[in-house]
Image (cartoon, rainbow, N blue to C red; front, side, top):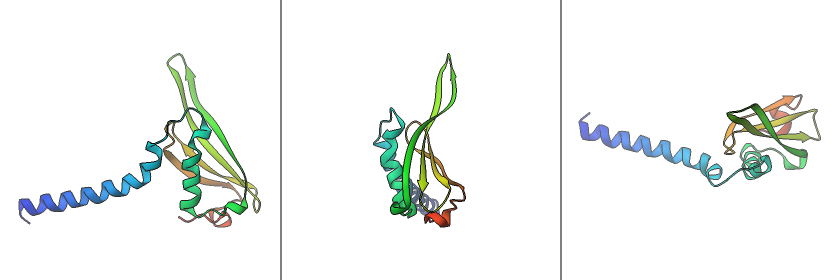
Length: 119
């Protein structure tokens, strides 16, 4: 492959990577979070994207998870804990202070199939 062809292929791959990332981060970039409830639009997006049955959700609780609190400052994350009608447990969305999702997972007997989560 010639050098110009490699540059074009590399640029095309970069454009695809950036486009895929932009959609995932779009909502988080527009939020300034001061409290966990400020991340609600991100959690709503997770519910839609994962196909969680809204009729099965009984409660969503927004929490601040403190990692450390020292003279240097606080280190904390935000979390959303969802309770469901058909199982004992939760689906948790763990986010950093900018509402960017670190991880989302189910706990207890609320496995992903029970609450309708697509992988």
